[in-house]
Length: 490
Ligand code: AMP
Ligand code: MG
Image (cartoon, rainbow, N blue to C red; front, top):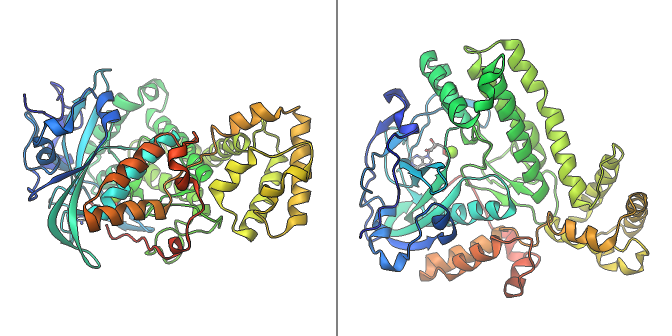
């Protein structure tokens, strides 16, 4: 029997919204698609377990050349603030919702083909995604999932020889993305700015019904929704900060209403620590630098709040926004507490952290390697802490910090072995550093060899576990990593 890709529910969820929300159209076929990656673990969770070898039509389904039975693809319309400026119309310019899938556990997921061709919202674009950026999206979605950070998922990836022009000639690819919904802050902004408040209400009620039902019983459901989204956003960004993830294009149209990491473009993980690290070479002012992400989360929530103004009290919306800062701080403190192996957080621990970050900044200490190594901190004597000390240029400063840290651990009667075990569950050994993604991309693009993608995915699914086979993925980046340039071009 042919593989159908999805078990479409009787009644679609997003697809049941009125026509104002989207345009229905089919993907534009891609020649000679080749399956680059298939996420069997996710496929199994979705009840789509299959041997890709046994289904030659799988590559054609992912490329949009065949439609699964019952599919009724659509591109949705949204707008949003890009780098602080309102853009009246964006939308799915190269992604198509091919349908919704009911998993065996009853959960419904939207399935999206990213790179499926032109839509009415393509603007100046070609509707395509290149293999390079599609590999990055595929790997990073799954790396984030491995880290336990909320994200859209990637079920499969196909490549086609079809040429696509970016800064140079590249080739096309399609990622099959999966999420409970791909609705963004920008969807709300669109209906607010176009004055279509009826659709705005339909959308907001729809989001509450399906994803935030607890808000319905609140005295002010729409302000309650904003508060709940603010909470998820604060939690998400605290997790990003913790693992050194920089999104790169935190425009309001890339902000998920569910607090998922969404739209992987020029993202990057910190190598050597620089609080002002800018991972996107097109971000000339550093608007989306690592240390700005928390406040940008709030900036985008303001956009969402403004869009909800026709539906809710200004005071109630403002009150919700005012809680963001403290929600973020407590979420981030919670992350830092765990990273430091502490059981309780005290106000003064901010001081411990800021002194550490200053030292890390001064020495460009590797974010991932340092935190992972901290699990081996010897609280008895600094004699055994030489490896940690070597991360820093200013050794006396480290000694002073280490004394403060030791005192804090003593105060909690911390036990080395259990502390290390706890720390190793929050400080990953493996993250998708740029150079790792780049090696996988080079092999795939130059030689059509996809084994590095498969290996990286396998490793990053368990980033906290030491895996001998992947020891090289845990190493410091090579010198050439500095030269990798990642921009909005994708
Ligand atoms: P992004 O920066 O990738 O989040 O995209 C911003 C907007 O540009 C969205 O509306 C995308 O759908 C659209 N877009 C990006 N790249 C392309 C492309 N190659 N073709 C058509 N639309 C695109
Ligand atoms: Mg986007």
